[in-house]
Image (cartoon, rainbow, N blue to C red; front, top):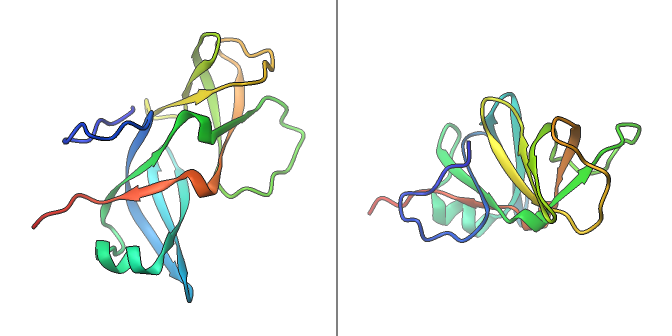
Amino acid sequence: MVITMKSNLISASNVLEGKVLDIERGRLTANVTVNIGAENNIFVRVNIDAIDKMELKRKDSVYVIFDSDAVILAKNHNYIFSAQDIMLAKVSDINKEVVLLDIGDDIKITAKIDQPIGLEKGDEVYVILKANSVILAKEYAP
């Protein structure tokens, strides 16, 4: 399911709630693994300063935020992709430019399509997220 944040101030088309599974800190950035349900993990690269500012730790509840144009769809399953964020999904609904995808556990993602690839309702596709377009958010409790 697509989650609407309590503040309703986020304009992104995809806001998914998840739990931090792992934080792999590097010198300048950290790779954060977030489970969003349905055995789907999303990997988010975050600046170390942001990790510290968010006081992010394992098991924290977070939101993974990305717009519909940050989603690439691949109908052909005969490829291996270099991206980390790849999930199998089923097309739930489709119109001219927007596809609604079910990645399991009633979790939906929207994707904007620029190139027609012959999608039909019920098709299985790979959902590939553009890594630099994924944002992590954590509720702030003053």
